[in-house]
Length: 302
Image: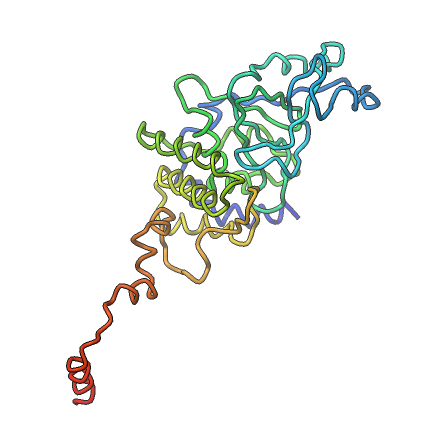
């Protein structure tokens, strides 16, 4: 069960969390609020207040986690009534949140039993989220939503949620405690560019999208400054687990590569050109018969 999984996972990653103690946490740089809720008596009118197309008095929103709710994007949006008569009184303040402002949306319950328990979606279209989600707004003078979503979709944040939430629901306090690194202006510019590129190529070029997503993760991981041994321990947690993205993504560095290689180095051109096959490609072919015969003679001498 989940508690047994949690007892196994937390010791496994405890050294990482101890190293990240003292880091800023998400709750310090962002406001996290649960979404809106209708009156409980409106179940029979659900088809009237939630529809696939726009209708009078409606706004776009997300109500449940679907297959289209993935890292960075939400494809299965609907239209929900914002009529005051339908709002649940106890949660009416949620309707007054700045839904029209750029934000990140995450689920309030896990979507998987594996380490990818949630997806963080970027929203710039004024989506209203139901109480099955949290809206996360960056505080002034912190990060743009591209960077915020990159942090939340990173293996660090995903592993933190996996190691600290053992029930079906993911409490707000757990999201709020996700460690956040310092991000320089230059690093932020790189991450922002990569996210925009990812969103551009998504659904058009799976190979380029996966490559870009890996680059985003690598840039985020560099900011945490984990020792290579701990970074590899973190990444190994995700091997074989499907990631909530619209293409195949089941891990980072294959288990057969047992060296402690930081992800940004593993992805680098220099590393990929250092494989035996690549090295052999770069060795010039010897065609001089006289020189070949000389090498043969050397090989037979004791």
